Amino acid sequence: FETKLINTLIFKFLPVPLFRNVTLKCLTEIAGVTVSNYDDMFVNLFTQTMTQLEGMLPLPTDIRSAYACGQDQEQNFIQNLALFLCTFLKEHGSLVETSVPIEMLRSALNYLVLISEVDEVEIFKICLEYWNTLASELYREVPYAGTQPLFLGRNRRGLYQEVLNKVRYIMISRMAKPEEVLVVENDNGEVVREFMKDTDSINLYKNMRETLVYLTHLDYTDTERIMTEKLQNQVNGSEWSWKNLNTLCWAIGSISGAMHEEDEKRFLVTVIKDLLGLCEQKRGKDNKAIIASNIMYVVGQYPRFLRAHWKFLKTVVNKLFEFMHETHDGVQD
Image (cartoon, rainbow, N blue to C red; front, side, top):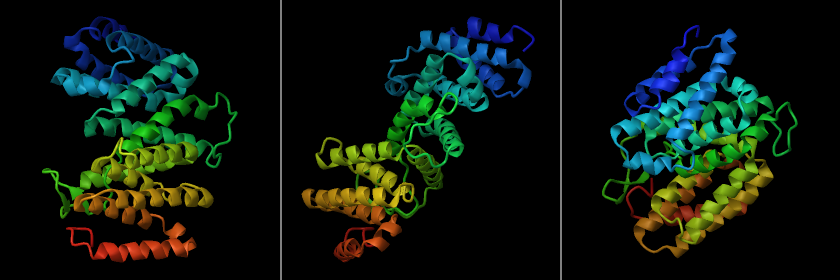
């Protein structure tokens, strides 16, 4: 911090493609250091790096596509960028909120949102860890605020609201497979019963569920809006696919208990009606097997709702007996 190392790294090496990966790693190491009396240096490190970044990777860039088409070096750059931003914002988040222009913080968060969409689970895990920390911090500050506006200092929730709406969408679209789910699509596109548990996927699901629960507590109307819209897109066919339906239903199941009982009731009635309608609408054993397993999964995640609504429980039990006659691999389980 007493030397010109940071300036040299940012201005001399970061813009050079050959050195930018190593440089970002060095900057990440520096960002991970916690010392109290060098706040100005950290602010400069962040603002100067962000300024350089906007020249190298302008913000409207579709990072997901760029990653998919990129060479190893470019893919590593995106991973290193995720590490840098997550490390810096986790260690020095409050400093950035108070001492850095607000637009620059928004740019950093937008980079992270775009990187979170990249189809590479290891990069997603890096971003997920930061989103989890951020959502849990914001929730713990004011646990039961619901949707009321807050007027606290610079209103941290307001500051992050727009970005968290995007993160909710990503979490719901990418939800990992929970442990209880048995009917899966194999590599050949066939619907089969799964016998081997994938511990990586289970851990990812637990972290994503925790993050989405915090995000739902922060603004349950937005979570409900996204889920209802995505379900409509399943019903009207615009987003219909086994994978999309699965991830959506796993996300719906994951937030059990995060809404008020009345909201939960209204939301679930819509969800189950739509899913039952979808089951009637789709032809073919595989389609019905996937929808059936999703209905049972969602219903099984909401015992509070079933206990309070016997008529609904009766319908579900009848459906359950219907599915028990299903000879398809895994549905009975």
